[in-house]
Amino acid sequence: MLSLWLNVLASGILLGLVYGLVALGLTIIFGVMRVVNFAHGEMVVFGVYIGYWTVRLWSVPIIVAAAIAAVVMFVFGYLLETLIVKRFVNRPHHYQFIVFIGLSLLFSGTLLVAFGPDPRPTASQLSFQTVSLGLVTLDLARVQAAATAGLLIVLLGAYLKFSSFGRSLRAAADNRLGGLIVGLNIPRVYAVTFGIGAACAGVAGALISPLFDAQPYLAVDFTLLAFVTVIVGGLGSFGGALLGGLMIGVAEAIAALMFTPSMKTALPYALLIIILVFRPRGFFGAKEI
Amino acid sequence: MLANPYVISLMTIVLLFTFLGQSWNLMLGIGGQLSIGHALFVGLGAYSVGVLYVKYGISPWVGLLTGMILAGSVGASIAWLSFRFQVRGIYFALLTIAAAEFARIMFSGWEFVGAMQGLFFPAPTGGIEISMLRGDTRFYYFVALALAALGIIGTEFISRSYLGYVWRAMRDDESAARALGVRTFQHKILVISISAATAAAGGGVLALVQGSIFPDSIMGMGLSVDVLIGPVVGGLGTTFGPLVGSLAAIPLNHLMSALGDSLRIPGLNNITYGVVLISVVWFLPDGIWPAIVRLCKAIQAPPTAWLWQSRKVEE
Image (tube, rainbow over all chains, first blue to last red; front, side):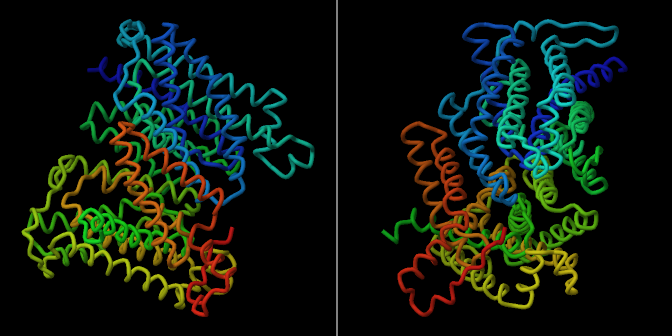
């Protein structure tokens, strides 16, 4: 019994790290640009498809697929920001919401046209290998996804904290007008921010491609999951995204063990409603990033 | 062509979504509160009618009333909880979506209301029964027409009444409204519960028209989006916007999904819908209706044009 619980807890924590990476992408975009990316789930699914195709065509390891996904999705996010999102940054929230709903319909439609509605499992040898640590047995795909996600979160945090670009990004988040006054190239900062956010989603998608079958309809679930994660932790907070991801991952895993499958999906929302009511700005109740 | 059953049922859907759009429009366009989980209220209305009628044979009129009271109270409690704890703006919008998703998952696991298998109304016998709100497609067309007319008249009535002025003041500047003595907390709860109750009425009729209720289609994210497309495309905060928007968007969507089916391109309607949404917000941020009004003014509008003066959302 103990070993069952430990296993569930461990796999929840591992998946939670990946959720944390997804949520980090959303939270960076919101923190800097004050824009909620309602097409975030589609970007995760793009990553899943990149994982699927690179593994299938060139049979590369998942890590390489994730690196490809990072580059592709960064460029995608950068272009999307400069071409479309840019025009709506200073508009009211409901306009942005509608633009992103439009984008998410466009993306999921494109995925449907390109790959069809059927789920496509990514064949990775790692899925069949396990690693044992005492009572806990874990599959290697999950361990690798979590380790990579965790490492990326740390690296990204360090980059934003110490690099010169990270400083200008945080300055832009703190005070847009002040940033403009001291000569920050705000449009470029915004475009790179959106690129980083999209890359986080894409990498997370590629990392979990051995665990989730690639399917266009997955996107809505990931968008909602990312919202829940981010709000539980605090919208716009870096540590909050990580904490939120871990909480949701563990809560889902425990709920799957204790309740029916439908309860498993409902639990994060129940958690979200409770948290919004009692701690409206999440655990790391940061007003600004 | 107008007697074609397909056209009649398409127009029924257009008119129903006009009504639902009015209810959403009341909340954001006049009350200033963004809801992206309107499917919750629509679904509560649908399930009230469905459960009472299918399980107990009680008239849908009672179901509609029950649904309105239920959704109104749920809306009021969500509003009370969130505004009590200073949840507003985008956080309030996310709370509505969370509540809707939570309800959808609960209803899809609840055996009593049919869970994922859904609820089915008995097939129509052909006769028209006003007391049971049953009839053929043409009957439902007139029901939907009456609802849409009621929605338009009601919106116009509310926006010209004392409440309309108070709500628009509150939408444009909450602190200023409070400084003038408006109890914004109570007014926000009021506007949300009225919007929720009307959405439930629309949802009840929608369930009767469709003849079945499934949690994913009546409470899902997709329905919330469908509800807001009409007012956004047509013109936010205007009286005729939801009608114009639904007339433009819903037939286009049906056309595109039919085209997509026949060409075997399953995502075509999503792509078109997405492109339409983005281009409307890009090129006509006020929506279609205010653009028509401007055009009429430019070419010497008839003297009745004062009726149509649009009230758009200030940024």
